[in-house]
Image (cartoon, rainbow, N blue to C red; front, side, top):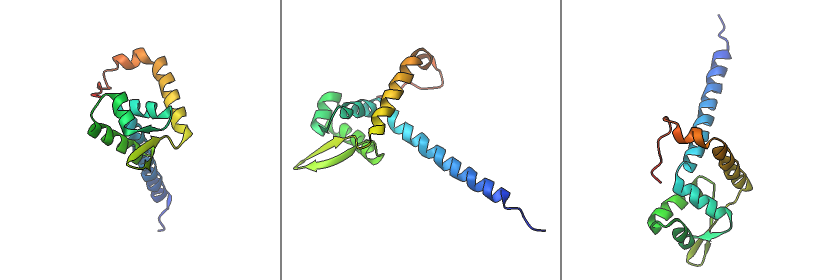
Amino acid sequence: MPQSSVPVAQETAAAVSCTHLETTARFFRALGDPTRLKLLEFILAGERTSAECVAHAGISQPRISVHLSCLVDCGYVTARRDGRKLRYSVGDPRVADLVVLARSLAADNAAALDCCPRIPDSQG
């Protein structure tokens, strides 16, 4: 009795869907840290050095470095060497669109977000 390929196709589609969902969740998790979001918004205004990011965020250089590395590794920000300095910028204009949309949605849903018991407070 020949076996149908439908279950295999469904399993493959489910695996691809799961991978896509996991990747998308990781995409948003990278923005879930208030310090990274603050840095990203700062960099959206123009190219910045790590020293400028430290001054803006008001936290130590090693912590800024970790957050900037995350933003670079996740593809939100690009880094280029300029002598001894690294300069950070947003390489994809869709990142700015995403941040603007997120701010708008968050503002429209602020009351619900503020009292949602399922979303833990961040420790930014």
